[in-house]
Amino acid sequence: MLFEEELAELALTNLHAHTGIVGQWLAAASPFDQGVGGEILLNIHGSEIRFKAEVKREFREYHMEKLLDLASRQDPLLLIADRLFPAQKKRLREHQISYLDVAGNTYMRYGELLLWIDGQKGTYSSAETPRISRAFTKAGLKVVYALLENQTAVNYTYRELASYSGVALGTINEAMTALKEAGYLLRANKSRMILNNKKQLLEHWLVGYGNVLKPSLQLGSYQMRDTANWKAATLPTGALWGGEPAGDLATGYLYPEQWTIYTSHSKSEVAKALQLIPKQGGNLKLFKKFWTDVALDTNNTATPDLITYADLLLTGDQRCIETAKIIYEQKLSRVFEN
Image (cartoon, rainbow, N blue to C red; front, side, top):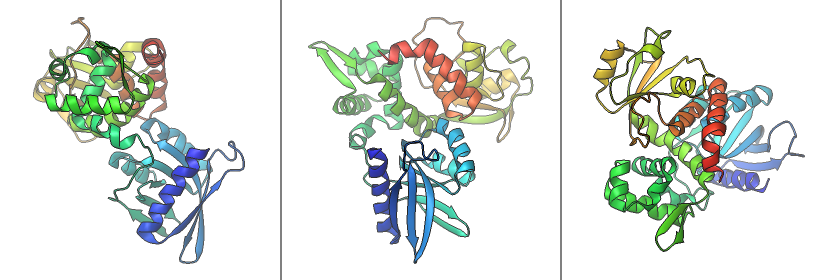
């Protein structure tokens, strides 16, 4: 595919600028050749090194399982992406998967060779990136979520939207301007705006939510002892099940192995109510709730479908991804594919 070649060539150009290493993209003979897009041939001090190359314009957490399977069959494998967030790079290194982004940041393992470059700022391949980035700050992502969750909010006044999404008024102007410039907001008539390319906007939001917003919301890691009876637990007012338990409540398909709770109040209140024990790497993660509820059902104990869908995808776990797909097909597709 053309985008694969363009992305790889730009990444290799920036790698050469940082290191002097000459690289060449070799396209696969056919789209189905060995399951990868092509190969990268590197010349390092007169020695040639070849990597099988998987190219992703945007790498997402739910790609990880397939990437690990591909790496087990195609060794050595190099992931090439437009950009990679720090948490994604860390996870790739933990699995010893080599990567290269368009800015020339890289982590390559080949035998005894280790090449690791980070912190390089570059011009990324997507012409949309500079314009849309103002809508994908921590605060901007809250605005985008509010618009995706409640699409009538595009016609709120900026002051109303600021209150609804919980951000400063200045953020609304920046985010809405960026969304208009990127083509995600269109004017239907003199008095009405509509969201455009909603599914694509959702995809962009998922990346930003998982790598920028959600990590900033974590309040703590705990161990929940009575996991067998979690459905009978009474959550404090303002707390909601998220992630795997929310997926189970929404579909009945998933037996939770990890628990997530969002709260609008103090973490100590939730910890006391559920007798949680603080523990690094525990089975329950507590997050700050950042959204305003649209539904009037006060008996609801789970996060909105959009949050549940995102959290399940971000696990990278196949059970959770399957549950996320069920939620999307049953509850979200009619909104984002129309």
